[in-house]
Length: 269
Image (cartoon, rainbow, N blue to C red; front, top):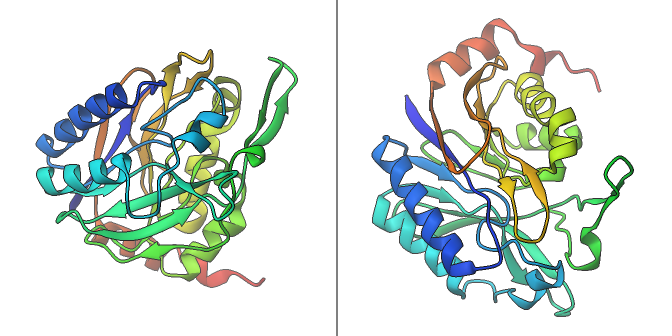
């Protein structure tokens, strides 16, 4: 058994306030026995305008958000998945949405840059998002060994692209970590369907920390952070508000499910 935790927040434009809240919730998860804690997408900053992420972008390996993650992992003795941190791109005109993994000594061991950018117009609400204007996508598939199984990293809109998760399984992934900030409209319609489907079809645990609530920029995010087991069972969830969901990963159970229901071995394409 190993204990996993997903943090839910409603981040705003005040970075210091966000970090205080994130630190409190990481400590709560550690006190609950979690050895791995995952923060949501944009945990450190939900700006008033999209360009705020570009302005706040940090050099790779140096900056207040990265220093915070390293210190929190070390202080709490947990593996910490840092949602997304804006990292400066080569041209400086956009930021890279980077999901960073730190071990319990505060050492960074992995970086995954979100592959699929949310360029969508929601007719029902009139909301419009064009992440590609201010964000630069990554193109690497990232899986990393950990005490919690081999971790496969994805971010938010990536959930809609099952081929990425198949590539992660082919890279040995056993536990998916998917920091997110789903809109209220898309979350209500699709969030639970997607996170359960990605767990079921790949026979993986899935940890889904999310933004959840009303934000100073007028945006509303869906929340419903959850942890899913390889059979698609929701082990814990938090519909709304700041908090932590916690559940145990049972490696023996996962091996048993994969052995008795060998769908991954039955793939023909």
